[in-house]
Image (cartoon, rainbow, N blue to C red; front, side, top):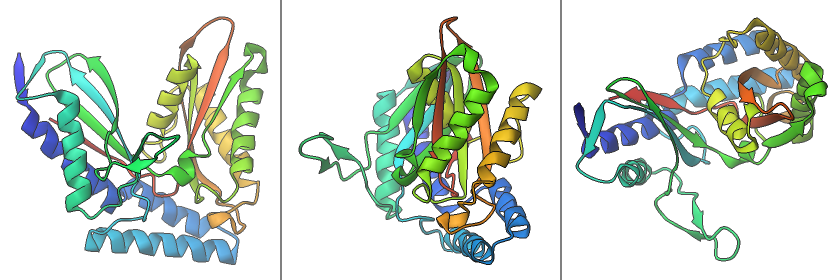
Length: 281
């Protein structure tokens, strides 16, 4: 049984949230450069150039990519041969988030009592933590500082099995059409199919962290991703909602088995920054 001290977890969480807020992954930067070459709208090209320049400045100066530095979401893959020592697991994740946001001068956007007082916690905690127990003796952490301009555009549909692939693609495209400029396009669209309503939403959110250019390994689902992306980019919303062909950069679909009577479909919309970072302990 391998022991991991909570101080290691705290340090890694802090490191990853700083990295995610400052540095865009190379695969996404490459996709933005490709989109710039493909874009036909002069305004769209100008917006994409500004996004690319902004990302370069944020990375070189280690300042926030966006003023909305997000609500902290953490996906944990916890090896079953690990013993965590030295403190409370969830508490230490939140401590890592707190230190990252305080020391990195990142905006703290979390409010307690969301209906009445909406009082800022001043630490950007608590984080939203999802934990899966997996084989092995390592911990994999995937962090997503999720901005709410895009999160507010999320959607869930309890489709009928008979709606099939066409119904799913139509729902994806219609969700993006309704969102318009609000999620800061070009977007990345995470789609979760199957499970229960709540589980579909979780896998949709995790799907946005998939590497750009990677499709679902099942060719039929990969075909749906390509079809949905093409139809989205024919909407004409374009970068920043100012017109053009680049409304979304990618559609990522993941799925789980579900009940014979239903077909939950969840959509998590993510802005062009798609901030995330991964680390293994």
